[in-house]
Structure formats: C-alpha cells, structure tokens
Length: 337
Image (cartoon, rainbow, N blue to C red; front, side, top):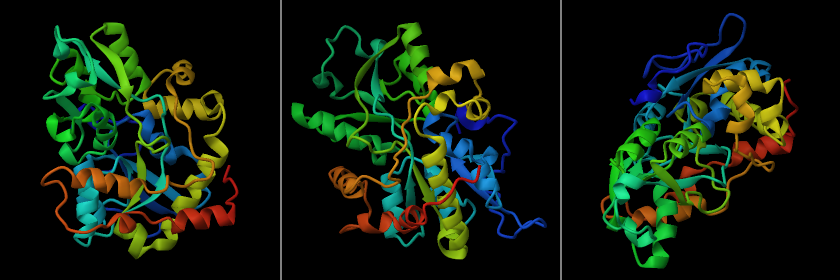
C-alpha cells in the first residue's frame, strides 16, 4: 500500500482481509466493510458512509478499509470484503469471466474537470503534443488493465497512436504527485483538488487533456462481492437504497457548503473544514444509473491490448447489475436523515 494506507483515526478501520461481519449485532445492526483505494474525493461516498444517517437508520454500521484495487477483487470474491468503491479494471472482467461473484451495482460521482497532468521534468526540452506521449511512462493504478486506458485510447486514436505505444507505471493514487514532480512518470491523474493545487504551486507539472471519457463516466464505482450479492442480498439492497438517498438528498447542488456535511467531509478527507468548499468538484447522477454501454466500451479497449483479458467473448453484461439501482429508484427511497 502507498501513503493512502493511513486513514484518519476518526474512521473505523477494519484489518485488511479480516473478513466481513455477517451476524447482526445485539441491537439488530449489521456491519459491512467498504474498501477504498485512497483517501480522496472520488470515493467520498464511501468515506462518509460511517457517519451518515442514511446508513444508520437502516441498521447498517459501515467500516472503511484501505485496499489496493487488485487486492479488492480477491477479497470481494471470497466474502472477506463486502463492497469496494473505486475504479474497475480488466481484472474485474477477468474475475467475473472466471466465475467470481463481483458486480458493479451503483455509480460514483463524476468530475468532468479531471485532467491528465504532464511532468515538466519528464517532458524535458521536447515540445508538448499528444505525439510526445509515445514511449513515455504513464500512471496507472492497476497496470495495462487500468480504467485509465479508456480515456487514453480516446486521446491517442486521433494522432495515430495506441495504448500499446506507451509504457505504464503502476503506482498508488497518492503517489502520483511526487512521481510527476520527480519525472518518474510523464503523465498522471492527481486524486484530488488539493493534489492538483500542490502541483500547480510547485510548478513541476501542467494540466493536459481530459481524463474523463466517455463524458459522465464515474472514476469510481460501487462494487459488491459475494456477501451482498449472494449471502445477504437484502442487506445489499439496503446499502444501495442508502446510496440512492445520499445521492438524491445529500450530494446535489452546493453540497460542499452544507453545514451538516462540511465537518464530516473535512474529517473524511483530513482537511480543515474551511477548505472543503474549494476542494469538491464531484457531481452525482440524479437518475442514479450508469452510462449506457460503458462496460462494452471498456472491454473493447482492453481487448485491443495483448494479454490483458484472459477470456474469449464478452462478459460486459455480467459485470454490471442494475437491478438494485432500479429497485431503489422505483421505491423512491426516503432520506434517512
């Protein structure tokens, strides 16, 4: 794990791989463990869950665990991690193709301003253009099967390049800033506004092309494993219902200035409360659904990279389960606050 491995002591942490709690507590509550790859805005929905009434009112006690994306797949499939909020990868598709019970069940927030940042040291004296990316080392959190390949494929195609023309450095999200500053990578995606501010202030990197494609595709998805899909699907539905309420009633409009949320956000992101309004840029889908065809598009890109997908055919329709999202919308879940 990288520097994101140390979460705020105010959050309840579960030991990595310690297993989920399947029995109800003496007060009738059930505990779930949600993994996150970093302490960052793009997983805010998970980081806030332990404090949100939308979960508490449903008798759900949430624990947060820092988990690298590749490790999350194993823990989800074996029931040792209940849910994961983070980017999907080709590994997700490979796991599903191999029979693992893992599915994307809800969207995260989308930051349409998210961009690739270019290291001045790695660029050197070369004039910047998309052609300059050829042969350069690019950030990825999960190797060639990372979800960043989707935006890269879109950016490279007009200039006649492919993702196979690049090199990749697999590093944790929180290590992107120092890697850009040192020139260890040519391009990376800072995990938060504060990370971008640090790069801007240091003058060691500059903002490049958009890292969001297709538009409105979330940089993080809520993914369920064996327990919430198979062992206790009723609990899984309650978790999705809670997220529906959070997105619908908490995360719309100028939520960064909400006086109830601000202290929770400050604690979760480990920043002074006064900074919260300047840090948040995520928007959350009011229709609580996923962009049509995004899984098929992701699979197509990964299929173009040798040795990334380990199966033939397609499992795009098996990776996503929209039934819980649909049920949450139909019920018009009322806020637990």
